[in-house]
Length: 144
Image (cartoon, rainbow, N blue to C red; front, side, top):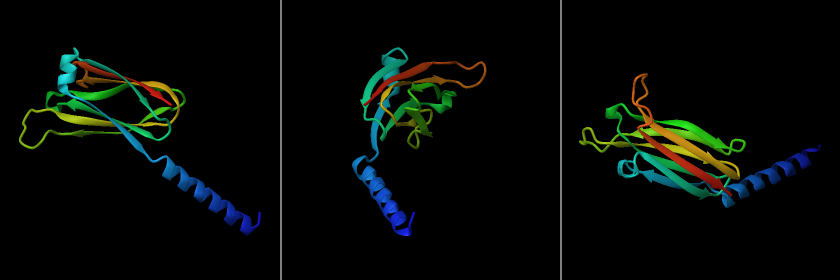
């Protein structure tokens, strides 16, 4: 392959990548579940959502009070051939001066393929004799 063809090929690839970034920017679907939501629904919250495939980020913000020893754990994530994957999770304490108050845990998932999948999370105390599945969050996802 001549140098001229290589440069042309590199240019075409660069343009294609630019078009994908412009036409398919990351979008985010935020979901928030409060402590009250869990209390009102008997400790189990179920949701069904529809998202666009390939570029969507699904950000789930869950009530969490680390002063009680509880934290969220990802129990199950399913979907066709890596349709869903966990990108990151982070705990945020409550506002300053709110001793014993709940903070939040933010979990971010990538949605990479069309199909159906689900995420199940449990709010538990992680040690051996700790309380397990005090709360459960389950979400069914349809990506198209």
